[in-house]
Length: 238
Ligand SMILES: Nc1nc2c(ncn2[C@@H]2O[C@H](COP(=O)(O)OP(=O)(O)OP(=O)(O)O)[C@@H](O)[C@H]2O)c(=O)[nH]1
Ligand SMILES: [Mg+2]
Image: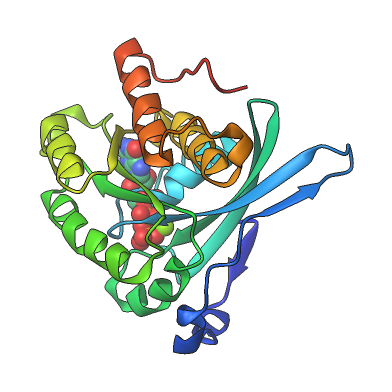
């Protein structure tokens, strides 16, 4: 991992930190005098659903196979991508799904601009727990946070127990966008992060606003991608 925050450091955040307003996303000029916007994205979901693998696939385009090492506390990684000729730096927080870290990770929700909530399509428990995660998000995150529900491990077709329809129904119940991914094959992984970045840019850059809500933009992008039946697209990304 590029950066690992120790559990000690994480515990230093107090309850009063949680009540502070979220710092606005920053926009700086980099060395090439190009504008760069920075956003915080958090990965959430039960232990073992594939959060760390999704992040490693996006950052390094590799898959962490072999024995499963659960994340302790929170890690984070940065990745800068280009969206419509604009540089977008994503600070991606990879949280521990284990219950014992829950109160630690709650204190980070308020700083997040977007949340990727994962479940594992081979685990009905991780799918059922999505409701618990969404209720935590409602309680601890900003009301304008962009949420995407991600059905991971779709490469495991024979072990699959959560259908696409079940995922889509749950997502529409909570009015969030739904996407199927595989950190193993890379299906839709880059697309998810790019779609989130596009929605965030639109939310915070009024010049890009076309009168559509960022959540609507996200759902339109995903819908377009689904229609193409391709793992990646998209005409609107550089
Ligand atoms: N087949 C398949 N296996 C996956 C996929 N994503 C993750 N895995 C496997 O699932 C296990 C758990 O993955 P992690 O990414 O470590 O899970 P996590 O959500 O980060 O778990 P915590 O850190 O405990 O919260 C590992 O053994 C991975 O190899 C996927 O898309 N397909
Ligand atoms: Mg992990």
